[in-house]
Length: 344
Image (cartoon, rainbow, N blue to C red; front, side, top):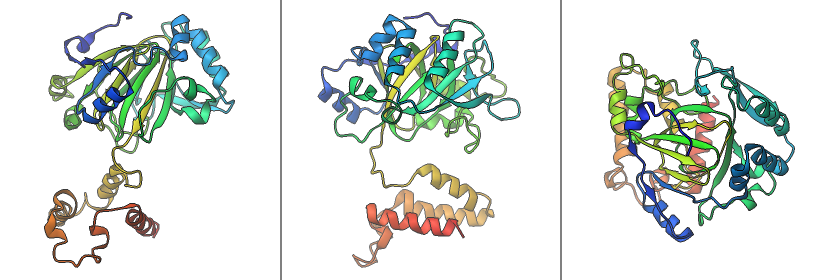
């Protein structure tokens, strides 16, 4: 495994390794796990992994041979020596620009700068594997049972992505290069000092802390977050399970890195997004007078967070409408109602 500056990471708890004998055992671990774990060599036999072990040029050639020929979107930063941190600039705009180009052109730029210490970071994030590549999924796949999966590929040079979280569960498989993941339980959000929830580098609020130079005066509670952190470095072929809503800071430590990840939700797809509900509550509730906010907090507890039998016991069965357990039909009714209300 390549050497990397440990910084704060050397003092953190290490994410445990587990072994799995087959797909059934992996499935069982994923269903029962409440904390992250690493499976070394889980995808070591993938052709993409094998190509990358020969050389990064072979890995890029393999990916090019599968590309469908449609334009890709890439984030390109300024020449840097800070490990390619994709973040905000001083004005809270993004410190990178977005381009659309063919994969061959993007890889040509990576070829040109790959081994230069001040290379501009290039990052292709969350690319749909089946939509942008033909045959890549079929030749490099993982049996994850009957889960409804979203499979994405992440390709880039040395990069640092600020700590963020995702609603789905995530199995992240390193295909080329070396990545370091630093994870925090979902309840550590107060200690990570999150930035805006609408103006974000990639759709999710991120920690404002620079993990390579944490400012203890500006972010004093970050030390408490570190007390709960876990870290792992993954080589090509290794995989990491990231539970739903766990915060993760991700670094591509090699000159060229490829990750394939699988997302899935344990809840039905027709349920709405809690993030949308939070955004709407900020618009509709947060700035109300304190007495009204207290009333709505009580209503939210009654209908949403507590939601015990008292809510519907007095309403005849068959007449409880959306207060009954939701299904695809009643969820669709709520969605249609909200769309009408928000468009007024």
